[in-house]
Length: 180
Image (cartoon, rainbow, N blue to C red; front, side):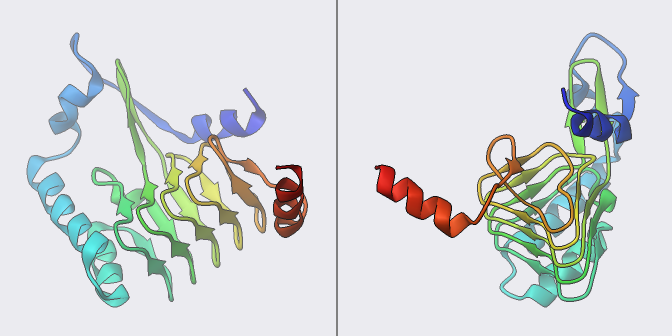
């Protein structure tokens, strides 16, 4: 495990759960049912509203910190249990069908952690961001990536798990085409 993985895990709050069942079985001990139902309805609005203004309104009602000029893509999903742990900086783009998680339900505990997306950062379509991750200012997360560690400012990451991209992407694609 790298230092970056350790830092993300160190930022997570651990919540032990009672009894023999896995932690998801005790979710009602963590959050009131009415709040999760309300969150679910607001998540639904944030996912399908045709207006970016309405999507930002729904995200703010959930407790997400939403900067100026945020573009929340269609079908993108914020954490339904702890959306208040998400911070989106100014000019952030969250792509189609992406997911930002602030919790992990495990066997004997659940974990929560903030997700911070810096100004001007972009998250590609269908990417998943795990709890405790910080995506730096101007960073880019490629489509279909799983972000398990922090992304430095200005960096581009891709893959499962997401790793830094090296070199010029256009040249990498040209080279791959020549090798095929």
